[in-house]
Image (tube, helix red, strand yellow):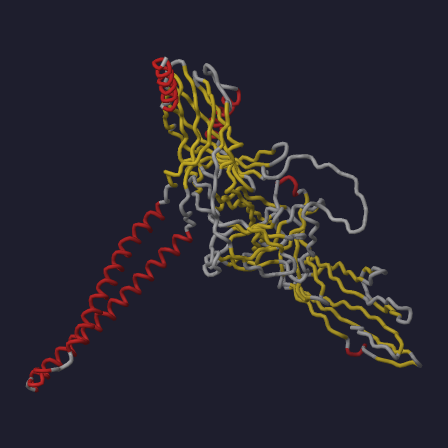
Length: 630
């Protein structure tokens, strides 16, 4: 009986041992393509490996630790069956340092060794200095020393003391130089966005084959730490020519995998957004009503007094600037990047309420804009935790043969490498994507890499605007019709007019108008002045009533070589009291809104000509009152 139990135990142990010793083989894979969304990216790896007979584990190593395990897709071709797909962390293998990081690390160690030697030598001289101090006292029998001997001893101590002090000063300077070099290397490493103690992960594919064969694999998965946002360069040579628009993508990723010479696709989709159709529920009114589990929070609209926000992004201690940090406006594709000093400036589209600050290795923060044109942010260091996920029976392929999707994939790959198109624009049912056939390298450093998508000539009409009562500056805008055909996204734009950089604006494509209005900033070639007519500023008293007359003259000069179309606005005062009356005397060529008193002139200014317009009014009110009539 005992022998029977022993045999059974040994058999079970052997079976478990055999299971634990399933053959494991590393798949030689590489990243072939990445589809980058506004937030996140789908990475595609391809690999090929021999598959032995029986049960075996095939391992994709060096995979991003930040992948979403539920997004894993595996396609396989070969005479075998896929039994399961497992994603797990590999804490024994760190991500490979980039060459720049490795070179900087190599420079740090000799400097540290030299510093340690210098500090030790400084200690030796300090001991010698202490010894000299103890031996300079003249005691006992030494009182009989001759004057010459005392002089020689004093000269020796003095000379050696000066020599020690000089050596100590030299060593201290050397240590300061070494410290300065180490600080510069540390700053450069931080500028390269080197992640600390980031490990890799791996995907283990368990397969079963009746006989030895060869397998082709395509592994796709979604990662969060990647994205892109558009920026534009708008160039206007003169108002007689169309706008030259350069459409650029700022691509960044910190997934833990370098994308080397890959096919890059940019999509305006966002897999992070919910795909569930919203359901309209009954709207019940009541007192002291709260909405949602966390209550309703309402922020005021940004003040009209500023159209851009500026600030600085620092580390968690608030001391070190973070260059290369991404700042985007939540819910839009408008964004920018901090400079070497951690500073940023971002033009605001209408309705902007929150900024999202992110940087590789730091926790992402969302900050309300409210009424503040300057926002400084300190980002906390990120702590990474990734758990193991197992997906059983994930995708099988039996007895070889390409599936239809595999054939389509191979055909697509061949076509894209033979068709001489730099960027192919693909319009899907729910998103637009740009397939860039030129291979790109995007390191895992969180920096933004500019990828030029296309250049467009936008036929436009140009309109100048001025409200001299508020601002004597003349603002120019371009009006573009048929803009929907270009698949533009909202984003920040750099303005260049007549070869001069004017600043930044926002290309806001969220409006529902047929015409896209692009603000081109101030045009200093049109000069405007607004002056009060001195001979039309009388103040009269009639019985108990006071009467004040006002007249304004607006002068306009076009210094351009082309005619300028200008819309100019001013206003008559409007009374809200029956005791106050406003008489509109004159406003030639102006359109007048009766309810608001708004005056609008639509003018054509000829080159190198001056034009004058004006308006006059009289305000009557009780003598006992005081009113501002200017």
